[in-house]
Image (cartoon, rainbow, N blue to C red; front, side, top):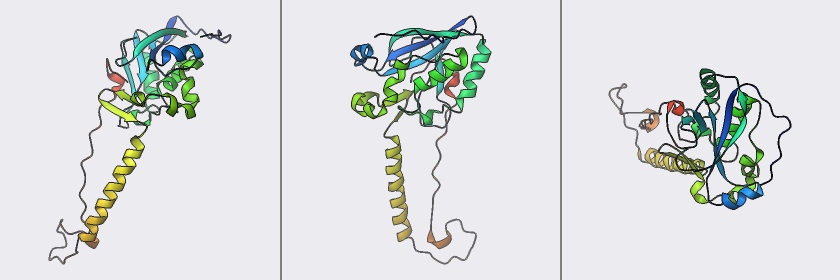
Length: 228
């Protein structure tokens, strides 16, 4: 693949910042030379690799791990993006600033994926963006459903899986619950009660049960090793 050096390269300090790029599919072996491909990426600085992945909770999807060792993907290459003058604590503070924007439940393969996170992080740390080919397929979004294998339409963080059909499944589940609720209300007959404070009698004959809410996991930002 032909690459052109960026003439506006910025050098801010003496700590190198690398972009570690991984293959998500064997298809990359051919697509790479065409400037395409499906990639995962992470930002390596101060010996730690930061990346972004999906999960089903509204907590951050940013996590850290060993450089070039992201489980589930095949490491391809490491690219020097630039240098930073930020220390380890300042880099961590930068990740915490980005944590709310990059929540696990907001992950989207086309509009907010790991490469979008790495691009913004590299600009904050070095003033330089990541190479355009790393996330080119996301920008050609209408092609993705045809090109991406079904096995990578889901992005993992730990044991949780999020895929592009999650919203459809949620909508289907919502319809099922609504239908079940309607049938329950139709079969419920309001009866008089001698005690107005009885918890088993609801207004207009409705009887609703609260479903327990799942506990959210702690922020994956602190994980020492994880997978997207």
